[in-house]
Length: 82
Image (cartoon, rainbow, N blue to C red; front, side):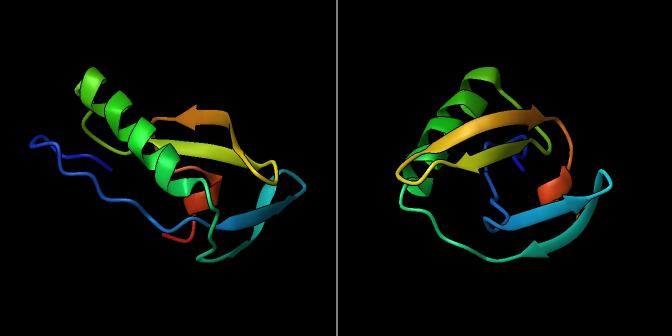
């Protein structure tokens, strides 16, 4: 979430699983060694776009890296617990 002054708030990184196309469970917070690097890159993008509001990045854990699968301008499956 990013406000008009550029302050960025990150919800914890979580794992989730779906059943029948619905969020079944959410577990977290969890860690990944690349999350700090990802956040820096994402914050640069948000600043460049002058983005204000919620933006969710759905990430796949590829072991040593994170892969962006989907970007949603709203709270997404991984943040339903909010």
